[in-house]
Image 1 (cartoon, protein in one colour):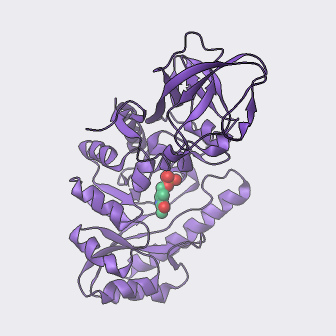
Image 2: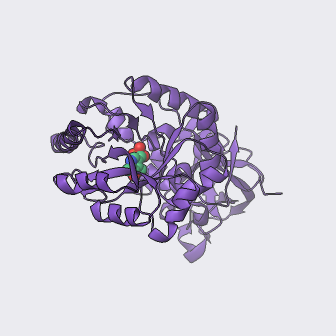
Image 3: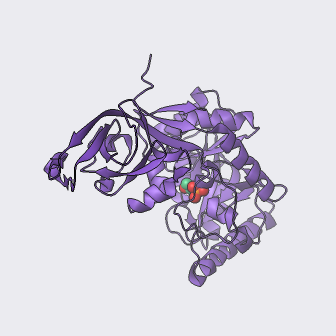
Length: 373
Ligand SMILES: *Cc1c(COP(=O)(O)O)cnc(C)c1O
């Protein structure tokens, strides 16, 4: 048995299916979607999301770690699972046991993978200017030597864009520069008869795709597949009908009246300017609702947008529900999502908290159950 009534994430699987179809139409022929389901599918729940994607015929996924890949395999997810991040040599066995595809984070790491002594499937990361993972694009002889490692079964080569969500001319120019470098590498490797799939774009690389000219076998969509952009402004060239998959909801535990001048919460950081009704809600920063939204955030109750008052606690927060008629204990508060004609989008909440929706969603905690609706 598990708790279902306190605080939860509702997953609108119809919206997920819609977003998948939208991307499939957007991508050119020959380019398949490789959804990023890392960080528990951006907080949505890696297993329910990957199961739904599998039903839709998706057969390539990317995750951040070998452990995340193993979780998907244990849940029966088939197809290719690419580990985008670093895996320590002590976990190479896990890569094999779960048939995961590992990123070669640079040439030296490729040697370590090869030294493991058993065949591993890999994609080679190329650093085209982000300077995070990948062998530098201009180290062609070192890149080429990876193909001489007998234990490495290289099936892909990829890079990652770091300014594709930007709208300035400088950002666009950097996208073009990264792509030119990447194209140069794959042209040279293919010219030598090497056969592999190439991929470059994440969400913004797809949605701002007219900036790219090359052809790619995979597109690694993350945040946008969940129907969300990183920030409200979005910085997109076009407009797309992305539909948010997750709603975040919690229950009102109790409602009380406080007199004018009364203070509330830790540190008594909020004071009632008049007689107010305040509600304690069963969700807090341990569930992923940012403490930074103390005395700043909002929630929806009975279709009304109401303010967070006082400091957000670990497991609870307070709302001023004076204006919401008929509010009572047991009512739902919507932290992300819709209530009647009102909506709080993850992008809006993230902006209020001074971050991006990726961080808000990926930090949604374990205590929240994920319910498909
Ligand atoms: C997280 C990640 C993605 C997905 O990025 P989104 O912007 O969420 O679409 C793609 N590629 C790499 C290498 C990543 O780390």
